[in-house]
Image (cartoon, rainbow, N blue to C red):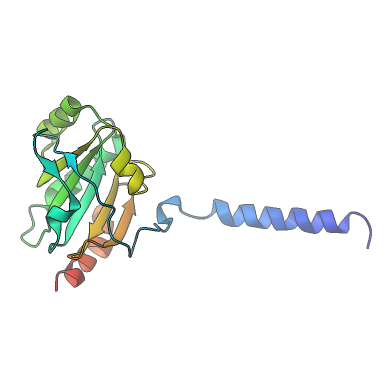
Length: 175
């Protein structure tokens, strides 16, 4: 074996590893929280700073937890999908988490584009998002009746994701 064989094998291995990594979809990164209880928090609501919200308030219900912000371009693309979804007779409650936003900006954004949320929790400093492992907004979590995260959507919910992944799982969890 000459002195170039070992470095050549290492280089080929590194190139193969990089090629595999570059072909992965970052939106399909598995969340370590799926299958675990939703992190607990208590924060003020966006529209009423004197009222608070906690995931404990939703125990016994299947629900969606949608992290959004007025400054988020992808949130604007996703928003009509959520607005349409909540009009369905079989829709589960959707709770918003206004993430790292100014209260007035979030309120104006919902007034302009529609408010599909039962309520929006207000996460000014992003601590709730950090506990949920938010990579960036939008992100959505499907939480079951026991308060366990069953699905995480990184990036906007599309009609296809809603129909093929979220709604079938909601039907299964609602039984």
